[in-house]
Amino acid sequence: MSYSAHPDRYKKMEYRRCGNSGLKLPVLSLGLWHNFGHVDVLENCRSILRLAFDSGVTHFDLANNYGPPAGSAEENFGRLLKLDFHPYRDELIISSKAGYYMWEGPYGDWGSKKYIVSSLDQSLKRMGLEYVDIFYHHRPDPNTPLEETMTALDLMVRQGKALYVGVSNYKKEEAAKAFELLRQLGTPCIIHQPKYSMFERWVEDGLLDTLEKEGVGCIPFSPLAQGLLTNKYLNGIPADSRAAKPTGFLKEEQVTAERVSQVKQLNTIAEKRGQTLAQMALAWLLKDKRVTSVLIGASKPEQLADSMRCQDNINFSAEELSAIEAILK
Image (cartoon, rainbow, N blue to C red; front, side, top):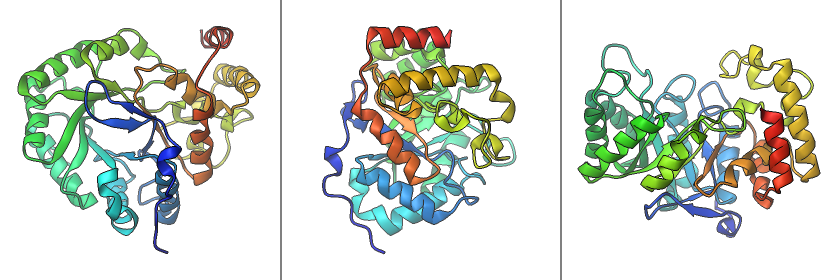
């Protein structure tokens, strides 16, 4: 069945400027890390993407190794882009990354110019694109000079294969150095993608301040701690959850009694706010204006619809914030 985007999609979403750049991102972006590989059902992927775009989500975030198997999320996205979203390409922000293991041999991992250039070429072929809007280095490489990696990102922009560049998983010191190098090259970094949630707060120890100072946007991934910050694990581990899947990144041993206790207490606060726990966890990140957008995932359209409603209330009272801090300590 042919697809036509909802005419009121842009009325359903807030957009924030990405650092000092001219680019605006939706406050909620869709990450395709999970649930879009060849192990998943393509029609379900299609339903999630359609709902996202109909809800004002213009940013779809991928990486070379997303799947499983690696590369399959980009292949599936490329198929659905051709089927449904090709007429809307200029309304979309499509991002990809390179930095984790992708192919055998010394050139299929980390941050060499050889790997980065080859990887983006492969990603563009998988998705059927001439360029991506944002291209990230996925993680720092301790064995490649940062100058080489940043020069490779700059080259991708100059060759027209990416419009903007970003970094992911960089600590504040190495991030600041990367920003300076890219600025000198004339291709400023516009965005940083760190792991950040109520349960993962290392970015608050200087990185957020650095991003604000440098005029770089922030787009947290794993905002729901791989599903822990939802109602899913309040009463054990469901059979269809990430913790129960062999391909998932959340392991059963991470669902500890202490974590479940915290989740139950946080859920009580969320209920008093008229939100689900997932909605509150997303709103808690968006309360900080230094956060440009939050990357959300979904295994089914209903999950995505639930997350979208976090926008209804991103304000917290001092009492609520204090109660949340007491639980998280």
